[in-house]
Image 1 (spheres, one colour):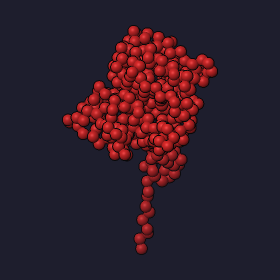
Image 2: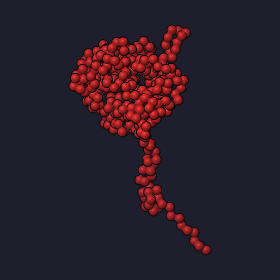
Image 3: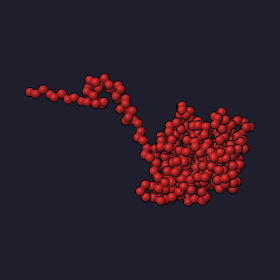
Image 4: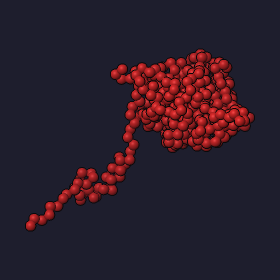
Amino acid sequence: MKSPTKTTTASPCGQKPGLGRMLAALCLPLLCAGALAEPKAPALEAYGADPTQTSVSGLSSGAYMAVQLQVAYSKDIVGAGVIAGGPYYCAANNIAYASLCMGQVPFFPPNPAIMAGFAKDFARARKIDPLSHLADDRVYVFSGTEDKIQRQPAVDATVAFLEQVGVKPQNLKYVNDFPAGHAVIAPGQGNDCAANESPYISHCEVGDKGHEQSYDQAGALLQQIYGPLSAAADKPRGQIVAFDQRAYANSATSMADTGYLYVPQSCSEAGAGCKVHVALHGCAQSAESVGDRFYTEAGYNRWADSNHMLVLYPQVNPSASRPYNPKGCWDWWGYSGSHYAYKSAPQMKAIMQMVYRLTQAPTGN
């Protein structure tokens, strides 16, 4: 009778069993690491968006970045929404000024004339677009009376700064009488109105007693920028698309590997010529910190659906070192370089390159 055939099984590293056992401790962790690694997101696609209809908004550090983009790229950006943000170049490349810029130093709010002076100097040096482009831009600014993080005197300074650099009073809307905390205000979403906590999305009721209505901040700021829009869709019916941000910014910028884009059905068609709105999360509000809540609950997508608008959601993540950005804030004090408020700033340049990509004609059309 024949002896049973001995089966030889290769080890996970392709070695014979004896050697495989000796290398198992090294080989298996490497295999596990590979299995757990998230796949790289695809490249951002072109949609043939309208290059003359780009706007931006943000909360907190995202609001500071929105101001920076509006001022530095005023030739390309038609308007901005500033939710709890301070003036352009307020920190002047020095994090020690952050508390003052946030209105946390009693009786010493930011001085808008100083920041306006910096902006004028940068424009003369061609570090940013000529400020004359701001004359026709439309801006929405918001500060809740219960905001304990970015206090109202600092946001008042933002409004004064915008006026001093050329935004016309009739093009500037300042909402500062809601008992809201530090948050984007979206109907039926997040925390109670006065909250100052994660996910920094809240709901607020406004109006006379017995006639209260949910405040729709996304709609308010988009209509301030673009004028009257079609009513928001009952619920978004488009698609959230993840894309590779590394094509636009390396890890030294603190920007995440992956960004997100909301694409309404009407914008997926070739030659749709959709608007582009850039929505910037605040500190501790990226997808790494709050999951999909900002790019699904902040309220922009419903308005995008009915108004032929792509919504770009760039992402910046916490970083313990190089750069030091522990809360995942957009750079408004200089952690990405002393040129953080110029057109050449790595984060702003990356965002505008993403916008440019969206305006390119789709391949094959």
